[in-house]
Image (cartoon, rainbow, N blue to C red):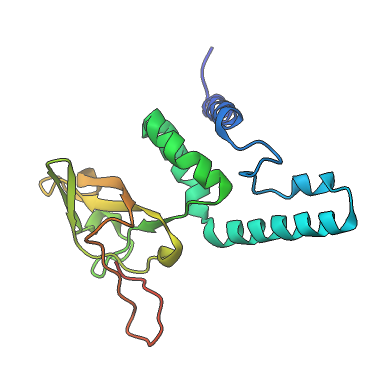
Length: 188
């Protein structure tokens, strides 16, 4: 029997469903961001209060949840992350409590990944990153970022580039707008 790409995808989806069944918030629990528990109201006032609360949660979820967090981060965590990292991030992503952005484009490279100049080098206990990223959509509301950086200058093109998960609250990260008054930061 040959394992096809469809089989691999289905196995991945089954693994994600199993993990979510074990770790996602239960419907109607205080951590649940859906409006499903609204139907449990017994009076009109209780219904309106629950509906308002659910709508506020949904608005927050829609504002803070970026497609990167839902579409890119979970597959990366399932393939490369530890169980500890999955437990730290996936429930927050599912609830909409954690947003992510991408730090890819650079001033002299645009989105040409083979020309990435931002450099990351190992240090005691982590990595030191130097460089600049531009056109960072969603950066102002993101808690974390997927950062592309060159880790091996001797290897040309994409071979010397690595992907990092970057906590945007850590010290040393600066943001700059495009020079317009009130401009949102889009340069990192």
